Image (cartoon, rainbow, N blue to C red; front, side, top):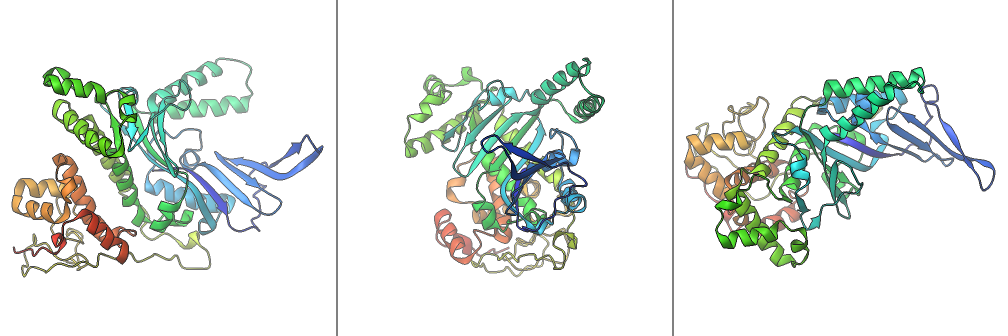
Length: 461
């Protein structure tokens, strides 16, 4: 879930854990003196300390948890929270004093196909093309000003590492300590790496978006209220990834469609389009792909959502005071939408109620709609894709009203899988989105995306 982090430690009086880490000073060849900066490494975390007291910590908290240079397995919310506690206990980093400067969130999924079939056919993310930053690397990225989208073939990447390790272990020019470390890593890869592992990742270069959500420090990252946001971020950003679906059957297309689809497969074609034309052709490309393929994008998106649900199923709901000693951990109340609807006079379990109105004190009811969600995973708080599919099949009238209320016009042209995703997304955001739900921003958001009075519909059950 969380991987690379860059931290600025705000306590300039931080005492370096010299009993646990071998810190070294650099040598300045220009002056012939030792640098005042000291550096050390602790299970993939690089710690750099300046004479001024400034301390920067960078590294993969996933690799730290594994105690090895490997992040190709699952890393749950509980694993992450446990790792944060361990950092406090082992090298005395107080999470509330760890100000985040970079964060990576990502997920490893297992596909039914070789991930290279997706990587080799990537076109662009939003408006920015994908490229391979390192020749021979098993990943592609699309870099923006504030963040980078990365997609990896983790199986291929780590199998190459495994082959190198096995070759080195056959040699005699490594020390016993190095041999033990290499053997440990090789065994971990053999035990944990699964076939066809694809990793989808967002690396935040700037913290503006996360700061707006209320994520400032390492302690904030541990709050379960944000885990669902990470799932939504990953799914929304993957929805903006465009690639040629290798299962597309071009022979079933009409001749004009074949001609246009040939253009769509060409990365240079997209570079020639202005913003308006690109929006139109992105939609047409998506429609043709959905019509003539096995919908690999939809399947991968579903895998991402399911895996994030699995990774965040268990967590510490009330994180201990170890996060911020001498003070109570503060959890920010997230406001709900100020736009209300009339509440139907109906006590039926399937009665949709106002946003912000408390549902029955039972976790089998959605906190926003009041609908029964007992068909969903235990502990669910909001109506999600599973519940929406249930209502679509078993109570179409309920689904129709949810469709009308929670889906904007521009999303109604999307495939049904995407419609269900966005309905669930908008239901949850009614209660939890800390940016859109401030009064002014929420009003602007709703004015952009919904018709007048759409969100004031009376639910006449």
